[in-house]
Length: 101
Image (cartoon, rainbow, N blue to C red):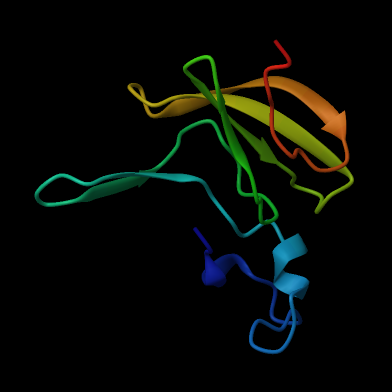
């Protein structure tokens, strides 16, 4: 989710994609109940926009970059507890995990 109130005043939103690199995005969990419920996933920081969540072997992972693409921290999400724990860090952008076997 984009949090415009955290965006620096000198970063335009309407005419460019510069805001993608700002740490103003946060992962939220949304439950489609009646009424719907939404809250941020605990343990995941505000980060630059991310593109890919990855589900593999019943686990969900997200890559979050607080510096806008130089490094990415990959978190495993526990949906039941609505929190996440960092599993590893890497250079570049996380594009997902895939089973090779």
